[in-house]
Length: 636
Image (cartoon, rainbow, N blue to C red):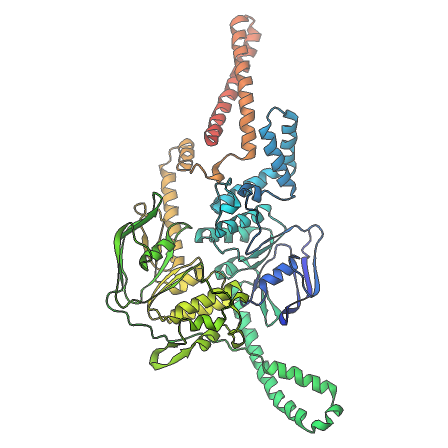
């Protein structure tokens, strides 16, 4: 396919009632282009994706794709059937490779039908389904999806998102739409996905707030701002630079418009009775200048000097605490005495116990062993990743008044609930809006404000960056940089962690004793760099110790979980195992025949021929037996 547009969007417009989301949107995507769409929460990013994919109607405009372009979309709430298995969900669809996989699976269940098995095998070759399956195994392993017999209804929301992500990646369409692909992934998964998409040939249009992701994957940024779309041909760093230039130009144009507005306003007010005789073009120009002059461009950096409750000498002490569930230990013998103004980031794979540790620190649960001592002056502010549950019919301002009507600042100043709402990107026009009408990101921001309004001096944030846009993240970061208290952050946002934490606790680490918590001095990127160097040294050490290919192969297959789907036999290997069982029988029979003839035949030339054939058959038999043992062991 030539490097022409595979997607064209022309003059697209969309309203929700009286609210205009976007108007006259124009852009195109060429093959292999990797584009991100950024905007404030509630600006219509997801709606724009849905309009392009015909998942909801648009008011005006046109969307066109090439006739042979295959596309998929990862939605924030992907559809699913509760009763279907993960495997059925993954391999549903009308792709030729998917149909070939289904046919081949059926043929394996009916081994007596040799012609059907051969036809299915040929279809696997024709549709390149072997590659399709190999890609699926890699993706499933990286996303920690191993037990594919589980039903979709039994999965958590995060697990269903990972299944949906695996499905669109396995299908590898020409054009892929991704709506917040990094949500509910742990940090290892995010870094793998980043590399996978960067080297992929797929054309991408994604919504993401992960700034390292934007930096390392995307070559184009589309910014949806004030109902208009701005295009930046470059990664996130380039976007920030050019966006600042655009804003500076916009400020100059606004000042120019304000100067003109005063003059035009005087003209409009003069002899109003003769208004009908005035130039219609100049009247139209007046209203255009008025619109330009009233544009709001300033962005408050959100420097608020809080005055939280004073922290005493004793903050929080952890004395050899351990926690686990169902016979599984999450962490053990963790001892730490928090210092005033300490900033810790907590990382670990999904299920490693991060949220459980936070609940122990805040004394919501009891440890299996050890104890937690909290100082008398500590006031916790705990932001939960699940968000807050707001009563039906509650309005935005009421959610904040429920906590307090104002916050005390340093120097005796105060900031009201309304002012704080505005600082966190809730304009006054939204203060009396029903919370049920807010977007997911806006509800998360409101929950965060509730936590902050309690004026805590020990702030715990459990995945605060999920569903927040880039602008909200920048505001939150500036706020937290000024926060005069203890701070614990659990987040998969690497950029966010790097800016705010001083050291890292790693749960589920392979460093030290099982269940120990690694304490790394530095930010997340520094930890990843050191961890990568440590693992490289370990691999080199193992390579030196290996005495041959057999020992290396033996080492590579140790400690493989029985339910690790990525290590199980592929369809091709299952077919090979079945064929080997048939071939072994035939080879053993031929070896016996040749051995008998060697004993009974006395012709010299015939004995030579029989001996050569017996040697060949014996070698084939030994090779087949070794391969059969390897496959049979993995299949058990």
